[in-house]
Image 1: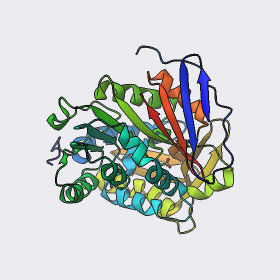
Image 2 (image 1 turned 30 degrees about the horizontal axis):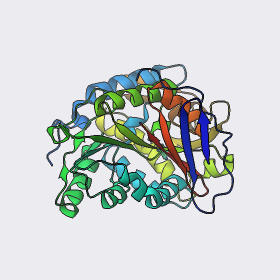
Image 3 (image 1 turned 90 degrees about the vertical axis):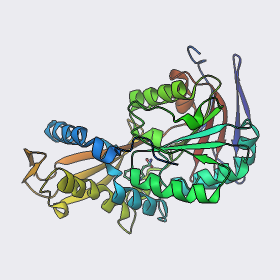
Length: 351
Ligand code: TRP
């Protein structure tokens, strides 16, 4: 189907067997305006000061919360890979299938000698589909907050793609980062899969999309993976799998605080909670205190009441229209939207 609004034309392609789509799609506005790891002082160490500051601020707040980026230490990155293999977590599976089906079409739009820049690359598993389909890519710049995950992924890629200049950057992409020399003078294609953009509130997501547009430079293209609104039972199961992997992932944040910030959290006295917040169109992950308790961490003391929640993560879900609007706010035009088979996720090509 093709949607037309003013001079904006958006092709929406449904993957085979896909029947329903939440999309009376109208794009309302044109955008305004138009091998060695860089940062050897890995963020895992370099950012300790801000980890402590964020923990103190987050646990002192009236509604306790922590930024989700701290999930991704070496253990957390590995647990996340395990989440991706659970029965219930469909996001990775749907997106990988969709990407496999559209990779050739995406690749056809990638110029010779271009650099692929990925935000939150983790194990770079999906990236291989693009690399296989687009041998004209000369450089790959994976950006991830976990130096451990980055090392492991980059080694494997450099081995399997000998023609490719793999130039990993250990950085927090919500902050300032620079592209390595490997991307200099090359067309740049951004890749931001996994519904990671959904882990930020609206302002945060707009800020990141705007910043990646600036980092990629003019004529940039960005392929973003977004999760679509669907029935709450499917959503909740995806963030509360029956093997308890997601619960372990969530609680690993407390273990990390214990280890890195001298905390004394009794991890077993917190429960994992996943809930659908319909008003804000997002899944929320919390850790719920099983009892009244006092916890020390980062040189401070924090009181938890029984039943009190620590909000650790949100994962926003969109309709195609909602996300196209958000992208437009960050200066991007939506060129094309591909939608997977159910459970549905979308890939947006922005330009
Ligand atoms: N980007 C992923 C998502 O929002 C991250 C994620 C998946 C996640 N499962 C999680 C984060 C569980 C915290 C807890 O789907």
